[in-house]
Length: 321
Image (cartoon, rainbow, N blue to C red; front, side, top):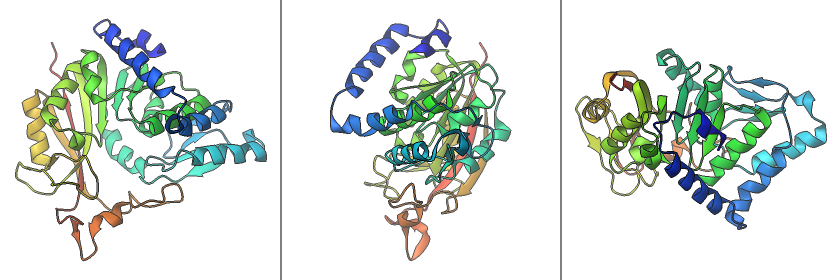
């Protein structure tokens, strides 16, 4: 928990520590579900990269000639153990990982709207394998803390960062529900692909506002539906085959959520329909993907008959005290 020393005095250290130790006890069980991802992490952490590039679209950890052919094969096989890879692309000692999401395209949309990240304390809520955290690392933040309750993604990031050696990146098995432990803590919070999984989105936004320092910025990206009016879809069952989906808003609706949660200077800076150019099956993600989620007879609808998904990008600030 080296990251605790980087946090301001306002955080609830005892609560964070208690939850951290509880989660570590849970994840360190000697059971198949945990060993499935802990074992490849342990196999990969011994490889230390000399070369690291977080500024390019492909996050590159180590060059191919830094390891032997035998070691490169071991790295490849253990990276495959983390399939399906949802975020990327990565290149790890010459092993090129083409993930389901072309995450670099999302990052390209976000970059022009970012505040200065240098020497800042940042949270990435639902950070997955840390692709965006590595991209942030190129701007020399003081700390990027990923909150990620998934065992698969947790160990995948730990494996990647063990090889990359970014000491200003950290991850913990916490979720958005633990933001209350971090009052007035973060200069920037990233929440990408999370809000539609929350049963009470305005409460989530208010918790995020509380976790920001005065003047801090939330950068939010989410699945959405098209439309100019302020409404949200509440699907019966799945939406685009995704379970655990609650409210899928229009851009106007999301803007109003942000406003009612207390954010200032709210700015919608991107909106586009989803396509299989940015989300698709690959060698590293061999299950169903975007094209399988749509009505085969009408691509403007999901298989459930709902409007096909868009993605929207928005940001807002916490008022200066």
